[in-house]
Image (cartoon, rainbow, N blue to C red; front, side, top):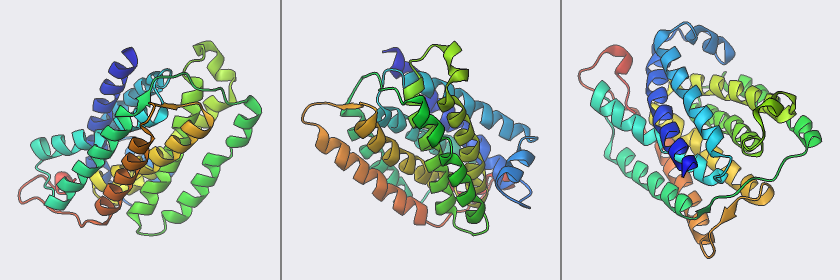
Length: 280
């Protein structure tokens, strides 16, 4: 029960952080990208507030992974895009197209199917040697991100962020049940932190170029697919008997929702302060 509470609060904090970071990223000086953009945003108080929400959400999601399978935790985290949408519409005057609302419903349906198929379990440990090998994975993501930042493809950068956050989730699932004083000595801890930094940099670039909803939905879908496969295949994540179809259908709905959300054109609200003049 505690894991579910941690996951729910984590989702709310992620959603609020998405909105604050999106507004800050859209009004930022766009010279440079990646870690350079992230460094400039670090001086923005609104971005700092959003980042605090992301950190809080990350910590609570990490704790939830101690007993909940990855596809449930990532499903809950992905619901943050819906909270961000609702807050943006109610507080900032964001507007969404009917197709975007429909696709959010499709995304939500997929996440519900994944959540109802889950069974709490403790993950298998990833050997330390494998952890050191995996430490190079975020570096490959970072190199790809450098090239991506030279293009105008918001969806591609968002998917790179999702890949980095998948490394965070996979590492965290294995580490979450370990004693806190053991974490600094485990290579997976440093893998997780490095991947989180690269994911945050990619997400900042994507938010500065596109809408919050399509950016975060694409990012979350990539994370969902990768972590679900690895969690079930390698970490011992369990599925309720007879509910394998829910996982397959749920992932399919998430992918469809992301593809449509990522291809929609932004809608500008009629009356709102300039930083908030983007659709979700």
